[in-house]
Image (cartoon, rainbow over all chains, first blue to last red; front, top):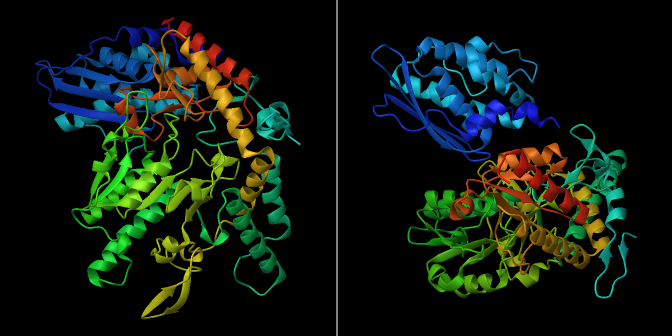
Length: 157
Length: 434
């Protein structure tokens, strides 16, 4: 049984008990991302609070990996700076490319370290990345992201 | 022989059949035996098919329909014999059978023939057969259970010609709702293109009756037979269609080859889709004329080895007997429906009665997304399809984002279904929804 490496308890917990799910009041940017092969959907909204921290809302439907990833990401990045989001996103994309061999930094990724097992399952990587790509796109639309745009596999254009 | 004499039709000897499929001997995910229940996506290949392709390349490979040497003659003979063999499998004449890349291309071939004819008619009325010309006010009718391959090409034809797309709706138990058929298929209708057996729901549709309605209003009748030709005896004439598309790889044949059958008179009148070498009659700088079917629709170097492999697959299936294949699948489908019916939290999407129904069985498991169901089954060595099965509107109709699908074939038995059902129960425990 290799499944425990994919479905770590943290992931299943976020799937069953999503943190901070729902829309936000005054979104500056919004992005709807779909995984066309399976129909997973995630919508992420973003705004900046008075202190320059990110306000993140999300909704969606789909598999445990995509929905837990949205919950983990929102919990990790809400209230943090756009720079922190950029750093975490880059680290998460690296982790997804690691084919199961990544050694993620919990300081940067928090609960998202639990997704290391996902990187062994090529068909699921896109599920995990969906909300992260949505946030990046939402930030760009809001004029928040200063980083270089990347595609869903983390390559720069 | 792989079939054992029975009272009405032969019964498949599945243990013996499995020996013919090398891939079924392998293990997956830490040494688990492979339980392959994804034949609706693609079937596995018997050694006879692999051997036929290899033998062609090792003994007769050359360009077909050209060249003055012995190999060219033998390759041409192999290609045309393959055409005749596959035609015989569906009771057709060889010249009415066009080889394509896959069924998607077969359906696009027909759709593009329509939009090409429409474009030509705008410049030179009378230069094309008016049956293929579409105008604003015309309609094309499909069903709500089409694979995207028999939906998107028609949406595109409508976008290019101004014709309107209509669709036959579905009942809650996954059948076509034909109560409004005469209204949907009316005298504006130029094309009726429907699936014979749904790849998602498993429903077998009353094709001949719908084709009769199409012909009553003078429309072209097109059938997507991808999930029927591999699974039941199909005689092309009995469907009463003008054009029928299916793929090779779902009927034990190689990837890279599909088929379009057409009535002689319809193919004769139909303009080409892809143009270039092999499909011409004469070529001058000022313009060209085209070859007679089937060559008119086979531009470029054809897929000779794949045709030879597909012919071997047709022979393999005929040796089993398509009536026996259908009876075997009918029995297995009944078993799948029976086992799923008593699983709490599991709902079949599609007909729950084993009547006019094929072996593709889609289902939803309460509280577990299909991706996660499929992942858990995979961990047990059970290969199933998850997702929208290229039939997204059908998923929407049944208010599911996606489904999990078992699609057994000639090499599956009750033990495979048991393995899948045990894994579904395991998934319910694992995800805490049992």
